[in-house]
Amino acid sequence: QVHLVESGGGLVQAGGSLRLSCAASGRTFSDYVMGWFRQAPGKEREFVAAISWTGGSTYYTDSVKGRFTISRDNAKNTVYLQMNSLEPEDTAVYYCAGRNSAYIDTTGGRYNYWGQGTQVTVSS
Image (cartoon, rainbow, N blue to C red; front, top):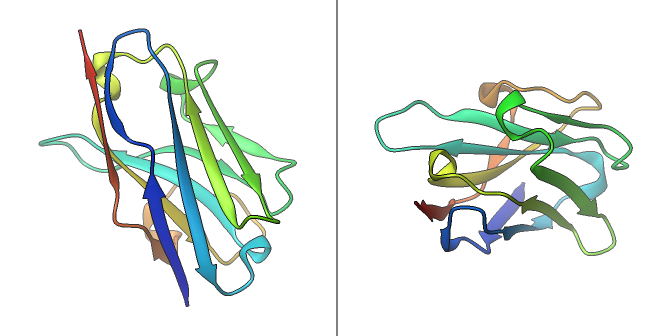
């Protein structure tokens, strides 16, 4: 079992930045591919970014490329999402998720563990 807790959400103006953190406890964190997903009101959950076990491979959805950066610190059992140049369209609840696999995946249903989410609101 892996327990995930997100933090770092909040209200920011367009063009601003936020850094989300996801602290993991339980099984060996470094065995898990970690991902960030988001869900805006009235919309389906969507993939944002994912990172491999070692952090050597990352993958982003097109809408956040060049603005968001996913990283992880396995010594601290934490994954991060640095979000720059935020836009109102980035407003959503952001979730981190863990996948017990060696392979990055963009499908939420293939992730085994989820956090409770943290709200990000970007004002125009």
